[in-house]
Length: 442
Image: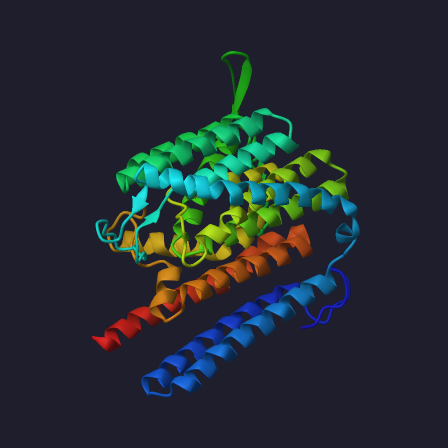
């Protein structure tokens, strides 16, 4: 399985077999976790802890092997280019901006009663043990906008992203105050926010088809005049709106554990930044370096909330977390339609949202109404601690992100399919394991 040459040259094994490594990691994890529960049930707690440690070591070792293979198989010219250093300043300043503005947002949330109290607010997905202020997305928005204006010119697409993000942050604050508004109304406003972004010129003109030729979405163009000449690229704009709304919800649904959301959202934005910078250097495209800087700012802003949201968290993201999903969706389109890259990096939360939504539909429930059935809830039921679950999401996102940045872009669409199968296997297996355990304990 070891690769020693760049993609496409002589190798000891074909890239398509890389999926065997994460699949093996999942199998080992399931076996070790089951063994740990069996030993703990038999009263052998020390041996159960050893089994858990072995599971972690196996996952770390296989992850290292996967990253090492991809790194040794990829050209390293981009990482020797000093252009990547242009991302450090925007990332660091946005991180510090959000970090220092967060205490003020916490005080604002407390003064406006933006508090989630588990004693008075009962919800199936509730994991809090004490009253905690909400509205953390406001801190993200402040840092993201201010630092973006500091480093980037104010363009029409940037204005659309700002307006869409602002709308979702406001909706989030209203939702935080009202203690959950109508899911249908929130969905309508999410579509409106996505229209702001797409109406500003952020659209997808094509999709790479892993099974054949490229799917073109710009064949139907509808021109019109309203305060100037404009045009609607019908299928491209429809797909872009649906993609942004889906991503906003899918990302925010994995926002239930202390520290979980800040990490994997920040890593996703950082991967987009590196991928766009790589394109800017290899294709000599300065516009992509601007996208890279914007993505780095979004990443630093998300990570800026990590200290305050880590266990025990001092503030919650709230429904405004959908604003971060909107930004990620817009960035994936601006970075030359790298939809597959974002799909690869956020594979676990995206597959989890699809599996959860399908389960709710099969149970004749609304797919947008929360319950205690997401992957992070299942992991809690299996005995994982909140910091362990958060680190799991960070680690998986970082591994998939490393693969996308180092590997050939033409292979990403197939990687999504390959690793997606393994991720579906993991999530479905964990869900079935928890349900089986519940039936055994009744």
